[in-house]
Length: 154
Image (cartoon, rainbow, N blue to C red; front, side):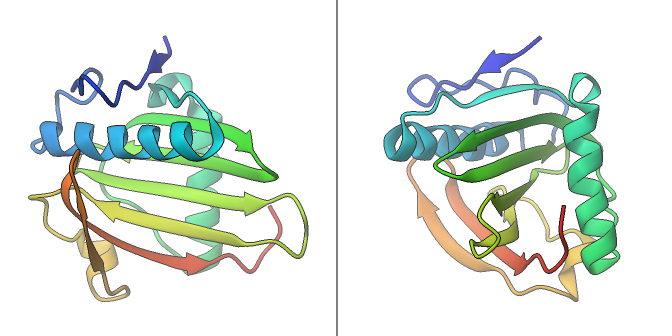
């Protein structure tokens, strides 16, 4: 069952099993606010078990591009198109959020982004391979983020 993410009244719905559920909910709400303000898009997620195609797509890109496997259990996922971009998000129990931005125009930007919820440790599979920059958010506290450019075609 899908869930519209509310960035005014932030809820941990669907994320309760995360040890950083409130921070992850804030991170999810931060993304919802961004897409609403920039593209007038309503950010809707569904349980990862019901969005297995999205999760598999993100995991395939991570594996093929960087030989990465995320050790945490996916809780929620979403995929949508806005302004010529195909977006996919997976939110993990550890507090990690992975997004794939894939421009439909072959000359456009294509990247994978990682965001860490406030209070979580950098996952072992990412710690030695990425440097994380800090960003402040009213909804999510301190977000640490990193990314890499996608080279393949998906």
